[in-house]
Image (cartoon, rainbow, N blue to C red):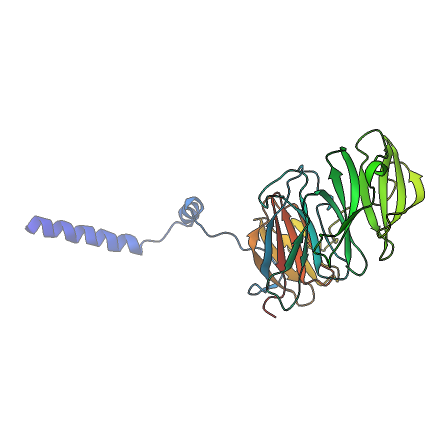
Amino acid sequence: MILLWIGLIVLSGCSVLSGMMPVDPQSATLTALVTPTSVQPTLDLKGNEVVEEQGCIVYRGASITTFSDAIDGGTFQWADHQDYFAYVAPENRYWAWFSGDAAVLRFSEDRAEPETFFTNGLKVFGDFAFSPNGTKVAFVVFRPSDKLYTVYVASLSSGLQQATDLFPGNVASTDDYSSQKSVIGWVSETDVRVSTSCGIDCERIYRINSNTASLVFEEETRKHGHPGRVFIPIERTLDARFYPQMAYSNWSKSGNLVFYIDERDDVWIMNERTKRQYRLDITGFKLLQTAWSSDDRYIAIRYPEEIIVYKTDCRR
């Protein structure tokens, strides 16, 4: 028993002495380097204040799947001056390749969720364009029975149930192949400009009355001779001294807000005026496209099989 007590005293004394000995700085540094840690490095936000999330998701819906490089914006589109949004939804509302139903969402302040309208029985490919007053929407459709493309115009007042084929019957056959079509845009509330394939390297531009489907020929060009409906996010050349690193950025129409992804695949919205930003509860992984509404209040976010609409001022 006496020997046991002596051993404990010796061990205790050694422990106290070792705690008082100076620590080798090199050894401490090496220990810190090899010690695992779950703490991630702090992002350099260039002095921006991080605030509580101001927005919220107001819509989630299944989206058609396209090839990974088919990102020209044809599968979804906002109206220019209204909070209307169109996209191609799978017919089964779950999953589909290339075509589906046209879906239009109508957002308003007195509704927590948007009104949603769908076409029925049309093989919609997209290429959406809203008329100036937002009463109609034009889009490209594939007609399986003839293996031809055409263009439809549907009225929003009917919930997309009243739709007019602008190339009925044999009129849709404009070349020896599938006669591809494209919606360029509206020139008035009744007239829409479209392009049609007229051969391997031939394209014709028409102005069509959406009420009567009467065509007025405008010009013939080589393929892609017009700007078409190409989706281009709004980007800026930024001074790295004053802005955080942005792996993907899309500025709102007013220039006040920017949506971006950081190096961790976290998603942020930054306010240019207030220098405040907040993180969204979604991931940037596999994100394909984003598109702002004209009033900065909504941003549509497209993933390979899903569309999300995010509202930026839920806490207002």
